[in-house]
Amino acid sequence: MKNSSLRASLLVLLIIATLTHCLYARLQVCQPSGKIRGIKPPPGQCNPENDSDCCKQGKMYTTYQCSPPVTGNTKAVLTLNSFEKGGDGGGPSECDKHYHSDEKPVVALSTGWYSRGDRCHNYITINANGRSVQAMVVDECDSTAGCDEVHDYQPPCPHNIVDASKAVWKALGIPEGDWGEYDITWSDA
Image 1 (spheres, helix red, strand yellow):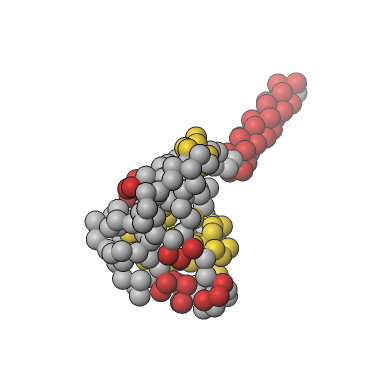
Image 2: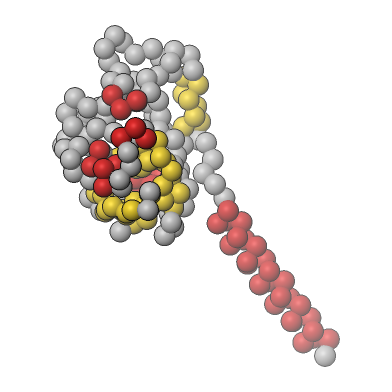
């Protein structure tokens, strides 16, 4: 009797420990990985199109190597980006080294979600404003670096960004006056 009672107690403890570990792992959030110090962009170097920020001399910017876990309803912030040559996105897209029309639904994802290019040319579904749209991942919104020529002298991207073309904003029916930052959810399509 004592052995079966002891086994049952141990089994219950094992189940509780396993569930606690799984819950703890799921609740973990992406922690900052470091900071970089901003430098003043050379004259005419940072493109402030679409309300893009330019680095400020001496300001400390947080960097991330991760993003929150992707679920069927991942919370994020939608930002506006131009993927065209001369646009505020800087150079060509990371996935294919090409520029993309702002009239195509394309996005850049924060570093953790970009996952070293694993999502390149895959589609994600973005939900906001009672609508949804599928957009192709073509670029990384770099959360690990910034304030340099490669990043158009813009700060590092936060860890929870879906940086989208005008076509995405239009498809979601978000009024132009509200373009810039918008709370959304997204998932892999």
